[in-house]
Structure formats: C-alpha cells, structure tokens
Image (cartoon, rainbow, N blue to C red; front, side):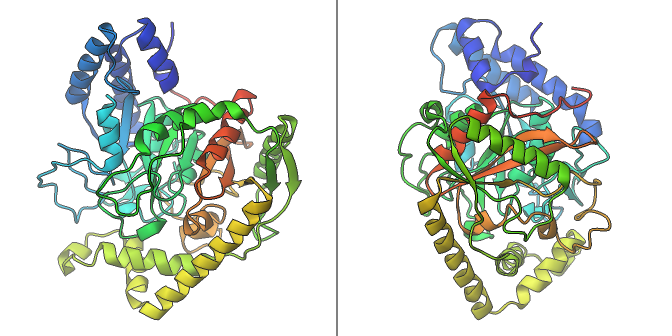
Amino acid sequence: MTDLTELTAVQLVAGYRKGDFSPVEVTRAALERAERIQPELNAFVRLTGEEALDRARGAEERWRRGEPGGRLDGVPVTVKDILLTRGHPTLRGSRAVSPVGPWDEDAPSVARLREHGAVFVGKTTTPEFGWKGVTDSPLSGVTRNPHDPSRTAGGSSGGAGAAVARGAGTLALGTDGGGSVRIPASFCGIFGLKPTYGRVPLYPASAFGTLAHVGPMTRDAADAALMLDVIGTPDARDWSALGPAPGSYTEALAEGVRGLRVAYSPSLGGQVAVRPAVASAVRRGVERLAELGAYVSEADPDFTDPVDAFHTLWFSGAARVVQHLKAGQRDLLDPGLRDIVGAGARYSALEYLAAVDVRMELGRRMGRFHEAYDLLVTPTLPITAFEAGAEVPKGSGHRRWTGWTPFTYPFNLTQQPAATVPVGTDGDGLPIGLQLVAARHRDDLVLRAAHALYGAGVPASPTPAGS
C-alpha cells in the first residue's frame, strides 16, 4: 500500500483528481506522523488537528465534485512560527512574545496557500526570532535531526525541515535571512529554495530588512515550483514585493539544463575548508549536470568573505527586533541572542551604511559574474549536521553560526535565488547538500537545474529511521 506521507504535492493532487485517495486520508496520515515524531524531534510548537481535518473535509468535497478550490487543495502544509497564521499565536520562538491576540491576519504567503486550499497541519519550531542557524529556543527547546536525533536539524527553519523529511506535512513555509531555509534543508536531506528577494511578499516586514526571504521547503524541485507559483504573487502589504512572476515556474521545469553555463566553485576560491565527503558528493552532482548538457567549468565568484558586513546588518536587525522589550522581558531571551543584540546596538549609522556599501559592491560583482555564467554551484554547507543544542560544532573554534555557513549568507546580501539539493550522505549517513545560485529574478534557472538533477536520480537522501 502507498504511504501517503511519502508522496509529493504533485502526486497528491494527481491522486485526488483520479480519486485514488482523499485529502482526509492524507491529512490524517500527516497528523499521525507529526504526533509520532514530535517527542523525538520536536518539530512543532503547535498542531492544528481538528482545524486541519475540517479543511481537508472541505477539500474532499470539492474534489468529489470535480471543482478543486485551488492548485494545492487538500495538500498538508506546515508554517514556520515566524509567519502570521490566522487563528493561531505566532510566538517566534520567544517567551517574550505574548500569546494574547487577536491573531486575525495571515502573512501573504500563508494567505495565498489558504486561498489555494492548502491544509495547515501546524506551526513549526524556530530559534528565537529566527536569529541563528540551528533550531533551539528557551520557549520550545531543541529540534533534532530526522536522520540522527543526537544531531541538529539546522535552522532557523529546523522544524520545517524535520517535518518535511519525516512526512509530517508535504510542503513547508520557511524563512531565510542568512541560510535559514537552505541550512536545515541540507542537514535534513530535502529541497529548499530561497527565492529572489521580494518574489514571495513578507508582512509584517522583518527587522532584518531585505536580508529576509520566505521560501518553500519540499520533497523535490517540482513541489517547490508549484508552491512558488502559488505564493510568489504580489501583496499590497509588502511595498518591496516584486510584480507578477514572468511565467509559471512549474512550466519552466521542462527546459532542463542543456546549454546552460555553470560555474563550479568548490571552496569559493580556497576561502572555505570543505569536508572531503561533502566535496566528493557535490562534485558528483556537478558532473551529472555536465552529463545532462550543461557547460561546466570551475570558476570562483570574485569576492572575499563578507561576514563582517553581514554581522553588522544582522546584529543591528536583532537589536531592532527586541528594542521594544522591557528589561524583565529581555531576561527571557536566548543568551546568544542577547549577545548579538548588545553588539548590534553599538553600531553607528555610519558603520551600518558602510556595511550596505559592502553589500552593494558584492551585488555588483555577482551581477557581472552572472553575465558569464547562468548558474553558480557550491556546497550548501562545508559540513554535515553536528550535535544538537549547540550553535557551532564542538571544537570548531567558531563563535557564531556564520562561521560554518560561509556558502549561504553571501547570497542573502545579494538577494539572489539559491536552492539546496540533496546529493548524498557522509559516512554517518547524514545528508549533504549542493547549492545552486542564479542571478536575481532567475529563480526559474535554479528550479530547472534542481529538477534536472532529481530527474536524473542524483538526489540521494536516505529515508530517516522511524518514518
């Protein structure tokens, strides 16, 4: 018998259309899986069982009549607890946020999913205000990796990554300010996309400004394209949102990679030390792109590590996030968050603007780079998942999470689309991700290349134990 929790959204919609199974059956299976994994992985802050089943019953009736209410009618979805969801508290992983409502508004991406009939299974865990690359918080505790619960799921969309990997919701909404979709997707062995900034509207505006993106976390690239077709539409509440997409991302998938110019940068010009197992798996993925018809050459983008500029912008944003809190409320914060808030509050306006200048120059350099190359390929991360409950790997010498994420945060500075595809595992069975980056507004190229790899059988993510 088919395990309904392992089907993609594309497969679910096709099955609903043919009457092979119903949204109620699928939603029950997703909820049961979520309840089963929660004690072990802590992927959720809240499950919405009865409400989900009510929405599923409505979808089932619409499919029975042959009148689906949207492109995702009856598909189980989870929402990171950073994004507003009507009728449910959004506490952002913080004990300093009051659960008292009214919670009467959806974030734009949540609203689009609701309009298309998606079934909301629950809210997923996040570190406090999404501030770091792993998922633990004073409010909800530690979220663990679906392949090895002693390891981290990554972050800040760690609950979303764990949920998708274990079938507790087919699609997930995550947010990404420095890698927070791609990091957990890589560690959990799923697909994650950070779209071009503004492609998916965001409201309320993030205190981290234009570093913050909303993106899909899914089983494969086809599901992400379908999801982006739904959520990547304008919303008047976000003044920085892009206009309508130039076309359907789903339809663009069939164009493949033949003829695309691909730059492969194994270590950003020797700036990053990459573990051998990671380097080997990513190189094999790059070789497959060449076999599929892409023109591949080794080439490094022309920039040095922009971490200092990123820290100035990120830490300043964190200070702004908690600026309204009183002293007693600040005592409730994650100690690491308090540290970066203190640093962010000490930056001057001139220092902030100097970081913006670095960002603009980085964007110029990447714009020129993409005149020569359609895609840049790197490892998503130089390592695989490390011990749960730690911000940095033990003995690494890193002070902050940015020390082990050098491939992700630069492309938040530049606002480019970037995705991670699972391309293998290390000796401990932990997933490895390959990152695809394109010029701003060319989300279609990232999705096309990822879809081609899936079609060629490259993604090699093990089924998590206990699924």
